[in-house]
Length: 150
Image (cartoon, rainbow, N blue to C red; front, side):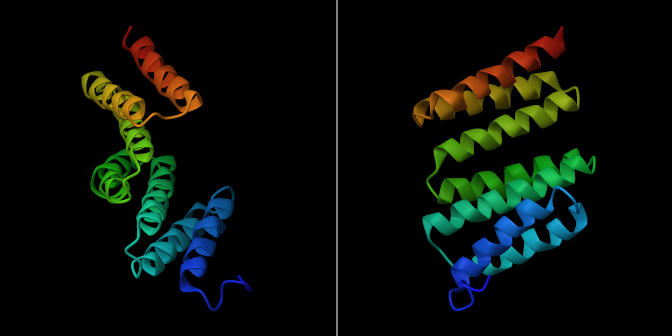
């Protein structure tokens, strides 16, 4: 934090990374810190800032999911993460968000919706020339969903 005092953008990123570390031990506090990072990032309208805002909301959503609030996570993905990742012009992150949405629906037993979102995530990742590791993970996610259908 000492190096970011004079730079509000770096201070916002500090809070994002601080929350990522804290989430392992204190979900409630990490949620508050994620929201502080989001508030600080609101001052910036760059692709990089939009991507970090998408990451802030994604991680915040995973905390909500850990608290068994899957509906909130789905809402965050659809209304925060995906639009912000699109503003950042980062289709790899858009694809990641759609895969996460597929997992949320799979966990809710809504396999038809899960398949739609998983396939959309895979399509976006392929068109964005995502790394082979990201594509393998996407296909693995989709295969796991198919396994649960049976």
